[in-house]
Image 1 (cartoon, rainbow, N blue to C red):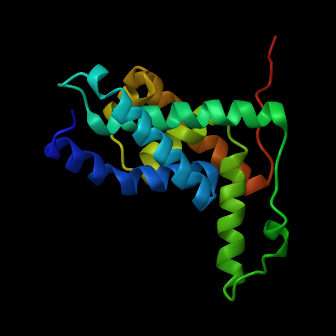
Image 2: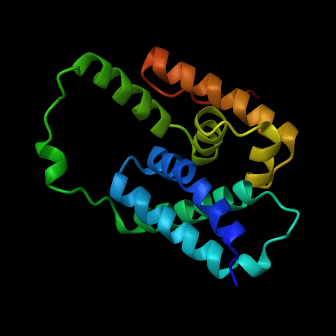
Length: 169
């Protein structure tokens, strides 16, 4: 049974979960659906959560896993684009919008683990320890992946194309 305290603690995490879901999907309806699925799964499995565990990290882990599963399913099925997406016009402040689109496009070119890590630490203000807990990785791995993700994102933004690793024999 869910207590009032747990209900309040879950409600407090919804805005952060929505921001993270929107950053991953860039679709408000899809983000809301993802957060709803996350909360549904969390409530159904609340009895499995450790009492001493970090609720925020646990919820973000569930959300990320749901996103990865949905992403894999979409890759198998192919891309679905709504017809209304083509009909949208540029806003009045097109320069800032264009820069934001380029930054989001650069973020989309990153591998999923780097994208998720940048969003958790850069957007959601997770500490390295919280990110390590949410992703199930050691802190040292978090720091090195974050460094590589930042460098790769910087390269994409500066050159317009992703940097590929060279194989040296």
